[in-house]
Image (cartoon, rainbow, N blue to C red; front, side, top):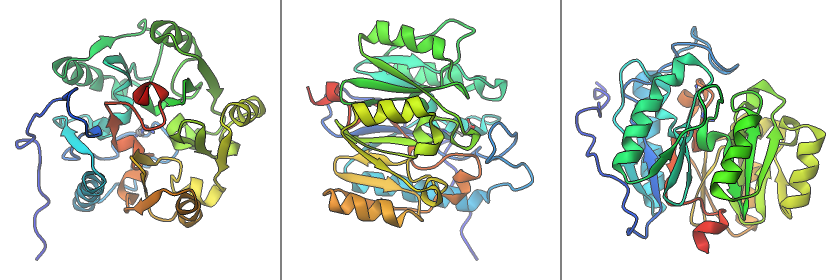
Length: 295
Ligand code: ARG
């Protein structure tokens, strides 16, 4: 007999962000209410639902791998009827103690915004919002590499909001048009590893995007399609550890050569919703590749 999958809703400890804790701090949301209940990206098929018990195991293993890498995991309470709340990367974009809250393109996810705002406010972040008609999907579409904020737009986030984010946070924003619906968030096709270093899936960008990435990121590592499809670019960087889904051997070899410690953990139940390791996390104290963090 296999054990009942553990349910988390009642034992989420409710620990909040601690600006004085030197450890990497990551927000996750237990998958109690996770599922594929609608289709808002090409990975999602209601007739191929994830196995709930297996999803719980995969999520728990990811949490463990990240803790083992030295991260402190903070938990947001799962909410019935919000199956994608597990993808905390989309909650907001974090810059120091400021959070630009998501405004989701699809009504199916808009219910998440109030819970994200509550958690961030309780954790002491200043929560900013874009105008009502401007969509923005948080760290899923906005990632620092060095001093520059790289931002994906068109499929989910609107290009219009990016200008405002740059003005608010006084940083250079490079807008990258996403052209392949399978790579609908920037974090599915681009992952900064360190200032000046990132991996990317070239075919997810137009020519301008590829050129500008090559120009601004001196060490830019292309991922082949087979591994991009395994969400190789959807990696979580904790110190020198890089965590991905299984099935990314070339990336892992490359990471080892570069002095990183790659770790894989199966996340297939989440790729059924179009997400993997990175999507399931929100780094609260600044990504390793963000210059402002180390400055
Ligand atoms: N089903 C979710 C959506 O389509 C997946 C979100 C994945 N998140 C990410 N940061 N790429 O919105």
